Length: 344
Image (cartoon, rainbow, N blue to C red):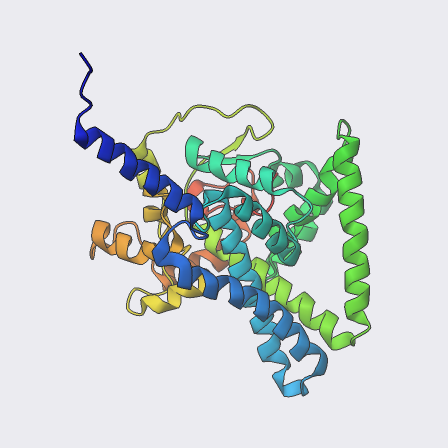
């Protein structure tokens, strides 16, 4: 006697198979993100090229606008890399890797490969700590001259700690014990970027100066957004195996803050691709950037608890810019040198 297979299970398997096939055939992971992601990717790529064109050939009164445009294009590119680490843009992981590699060349994060960037950031989520291979505060404590130099930059309102971390990504493979593969990669990339910037210099001094100012603006925005989003401990374990979470979700929520640029005008938060909705991002890390405002409002409503006001952000960021450099700095002073773009 033949066993009868319930019709419902057959239909269910067919629906699951068709659903999986549909996901594989979609280019974007979420259908409601197709327009938003296309606009964001198109903006950062066209902005990068368009701003350089303005710096090179437009009348000089366009120069400040071109610097701001280029700096903002780099900011959006960086936060699209963040989306790539979480796999929220495309249905296939290889598309995230390809886009991230292109955007890393734009943002200067190309010296560390995307795999290392992704590993560092995901460990930040899993272990609920700021995971690093090299703590810049301890490094500066061991080298007083370096600390004085960085402190002078921070005092002058420059993103000196971020600059240091990007330089260390280049230098780190040349430490004792570094692999020849890492060193050859860095040397090859460094050579290509020197050629690229030499070519830009032929377009005029205003291009190189404008690019430098735009890049400093970009690093300052990244430092500003990272500084007050967590009061996590810094853990030197990036070079080792991934650890199991030692902190609870309640700890994660209590030590995570959303630094909205504006609650009254949420469209302004698009300036940082909604990265400022940080609490809901940690609760729902697989959700794409364009859904975060709605999810934040659904979960928190008008609760101001996890939100740091823009005025408070500015006061604490600039007043405590030197305090954050100390290896004994309290967690309330904020973090420095923990950008996901620097896999150290």
